[in-house]
Length: 233
Image (tube, rainbow, N blue to C red; front, side, top):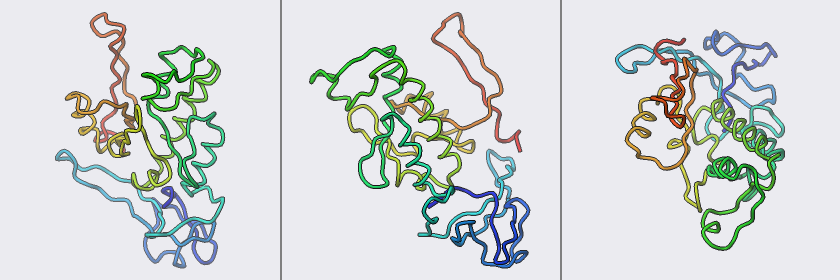
């Protein structure tokens, strides 16, 4: 699996953009710069909430396809790079497979960066802890942000979850489709949060419209309003 590509090359080496390409225009089959064959998903409109929504075009791998080693459109290469600079935020569990604990940033914020070790009691049930010094918190946040940006570039949840596993608290696995909500799934995210159907953190992709702080004078209650996908093209 791989990252959604905004361009590809034909057999003559000519570059084509995903949003403007039409089948048969270039010398097919098209391919990534690394030489791997790719298919074109043209732009289209879909009905959502009784309105038409524009979806941008992109190039993608064929089923069971894989980019060449070191290709920047390979999910595994991107995750390897993120993990290598993550200060243990993303831990390796086997070759080309990593684990990210959703509780880590929460722990770091609660501890305020203080040093601590597993005490064999309640801490042990939460799995490995990572807050060793206050200087690591920016690395935690940066690594998580990069992983989320990578997911935003993927065609499907499966593209990233075969390389990066999500775990909350002890060893409770969290499916990417229950953690990461793209704009077309905002309604599902709202339902999950407002009805308290999830206990783990969630990530919501979108463009910020406005921010309201200290709702009704309560400093712990803040609201981020996102632009509706129906209004942004």
